[in-house]
Structure formats: C-alpha cells, structure tokens
Image 1 (cartoon, one colour):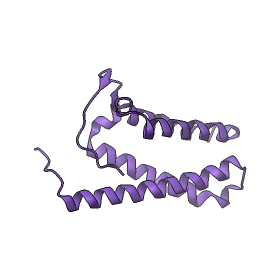
Image 2 (tube, rainbow, N blue to C red; image 1 turned 45 degrees about the vertical axis):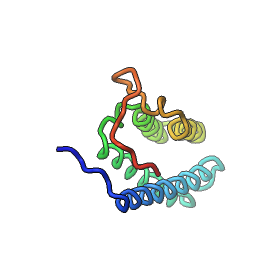
Image 3 (cartoon, one colour; image 1 turned 30 degrees about the vertical axis):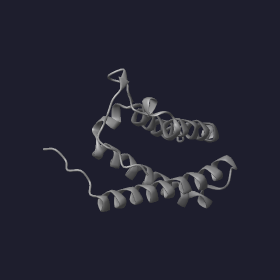
Image 4 (tube, rainbow, N blue to C red; image 1 turned 180 degrees about the horizontal axis):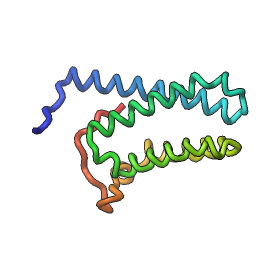
Length: 136
C-alpha cells in the first residue's frame, strides 16, 4: 500500500516536530558533553544525558519507521556505530572524553556530509534513494 504525500500542514508539523527534537537532542549532548569533557560530577549533567538519549532514540525510531533502508545507509550505520561507542562508556569509563569526541565527529560527518555519502548503502555499494525525508 503506497503512502500518500503529506499535506502542507502535515509537512510543517512533521518538520517543526523533528526540528524541536533535534534542538533538544543537541542541548542534551552539549550539557552532557560539557560535563564529561570538563570532568564535572555526573549528577550535575545526568539530566542532559537522559535528554540526549531519549531524543536520540526517538529520532532514530522516526527514521527507521519512515524507511527501514535508513539502517543500511551510512547515516544509519554510523548512528549504530555511535551507539556502540556509547556502550563502551561502561567498560572504558576512563576514555569517555575520547569516545565522546569520536561520537561528535561521526555526527558531523552524518549531518553535514554530502547526500551521496549519507545515503550510501553499505549493502548495495552505492547511494540509494529512500522515501521523501522530512528534514529538521
């Protein structure tokens, strides 16, 4: 069953919702990242960490529900790599700053790289088209 195109009103609501989620996510990353990089006690940045993890999870689910092929595109694969690096915070707690910097650099590549790079399919070996994205 083919999906209908979004109406202009639906598009605006989706776009603003995704933009708001991304803004809260970046705020959470900034707060938690500052705490990690400056060696601030965890209880002072834990709320930011929770904010970042919750919004990041919602954004990831949003992309997967929109089009499962996100998981095989470089943007999805690198997001999964970032989650793997986050999981290393537990056994490699002394390396949190280095892991965080790596995660941020991967995020920049995913967010600001050319579309051919972001949409590159690790399965197909080329850039693949997906359903129309709602940027934000």
